[in-house]
Length: 189
Length: 335
Image 1 (cartoon, each protein chain N blue to C red):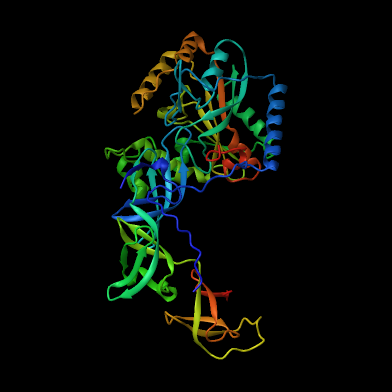
Image 2 (cartoon, one colour; image 1 turned 90 degrees about the vertical axis):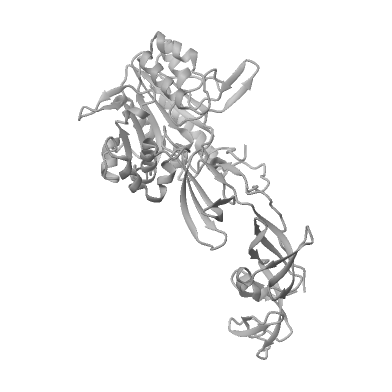
């Protein structure tokens, strides 16, 4: 979208090069006392997730990528993918299954997520760090043992995903899941 | 299901908007106390040696034209002024006026320099020694560094050419561009000008910062000397042991960090004018010459040596910190 001076590039800037949007993770400025300045940046490809290091020259112009995060609500899944509604514009957008990836395991109807758009096209979705899910099926609960670290598998309602839960959990119970680690994070209040 | 907590900020720009900053200082109280102690030690060091402390203007009528150093311009009702990139010009005017050895710990500003070890605003500790050469001044700088850090004065001396031979395996004065390009690999694109031409000197700077500097000053001071003529700035030229012309300039490194830049000063005002003219012509932005400074040089700068020390970096190293911003009461971004 726009051209920016490398001096304006900071952690969090989204750049466009090699036909892909990149997120700047780190910027390091180096310069001999009298001489040319350079920026050594570490960037992550927002589509493939690959990271690489790149050296840019002081004063160089960079292309910034037209990347934005929008808050969206998940509506339903159809033959083309997952349909979300933009909370600002109320427009519907379909996100392909390969972009949703294993986030689908914790994606429930009406859940609010952050969708990253590049040139208006979704390239990434980010779930809330913690979500509340209901246990659809698990082995009977072991009563009284609330300190136990022994886990058993539980199938989640709505998505059918399986996660390990402590043995005291029962069918119908609402639990918290950390979406980053995909682990049980406590009972829902 | 329960409502989800989510940051629903929408950023439509490619430029990251940092969170609202607080009003808190950038340095801890302990750091500022130690920094103040170091300033006191500097003051005592120069008082004992009869070097006069002076204050110089922050708004200067002309700018320094060192290679790769860019000033901030300030509009005033008396025309544009320049924030000093170092206090070099006013200090040399004092020396030219016969005021003897002088020192200052002055604010210095460099546009576009921003990083863990660079700040657009910092303090420069700079002094001049009439009648001295660079080697004599070097010993005094190391003595001061020892007073401030307690790390002694043990040092090795490495010429610019030897450093390239040792760490890059080339002779920087004869290495062809094709080989420099190969050595840089993926970084080679950063050594090209906007028009696509390969910039030999930028390539050397890139190799210096990425392949040489990280090795310098490990466990003792490293002094880099005999700089090439194109970065002589205001140092005089002399012949090295192979009879090549080199700049009488030194830089002191510790833990890969450049701390001091010293010269046996150029006193030939005609040669200086020529260098300034060349540098001025290279600039994309027109920077006028510092007329009063050049008049002082034409009047005559006594034989002298001078050195500039990045004081915040020295404080950073002495206190075991890793970012200059944490040595400043209010750093850039929190100004």
